[in-house]
Image (cartoon, rainbow, N blue to C red; front, side, top):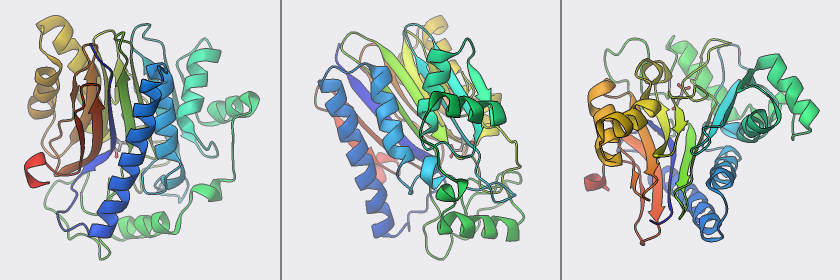
Length: 321
Ligand code: ASP
């Protein structure tokens, strides 16, 4: 049994024409974050600490849709959400509707550790953040020029979108990619297992461009976007409404638990059979130290490593990389 780690920076209709510099920027970020996670696992850090550490790093990177890079609501505001879960104890914490918290994932962990509850949202979550003394900033910190432009384009097209190219509500046809090709930013997540089979999962997001104020996606919902137990840890990305309907993360665990499927079989079944194409990707690790990263979208920003020396960083299906 060895350690393993998987992380993602969002799944969606990522065009193969994504300019090299944009691709390389995100691949470099994935490589950097993977390195941080691997070093932490080698240093025998607990998986819960590892996933929090890696997701914080991804949140601080403006090229992903979480923390600093969070996309904007239909009112031009940010509403960030996150979830963290420990496999063996099934303790978990989640937050939604954050507007000033720099690292939503750490607040989710504090909800888990410092309250009798699992999920805090909006004013209550912001108040709790202040009580706990976590780093907060003015909301303007999160409102990047790129995301103002993304919102403008989404409003012009009258759509709620995961990115510029992918319609959410009317799956009629693929739209033309944006002029600069930099449309693809995504939710972030990390799963990890140590040598003793301890598992943890964490996911963080700004949601969809032009989402309704108050909308909550799959990311903070235990069993939908995030789940971990004693068998596996899962972090999903894609269209939140579809992921919630299919209880994606919990279904992977349930197929292992009740049907005896392997991690790869369970994750592949959920991605291929339970969720309509173009809607989901996930990263998952098992207590045995396996890792899998299936998706049914065009691509998923992803990276993984295992103790036996396997490592992968990719965007599109492996054959095309
Ligand atoms: N699943 C996220 C949401 O629906 C979006 C994403 O994965 O990029 O909020």
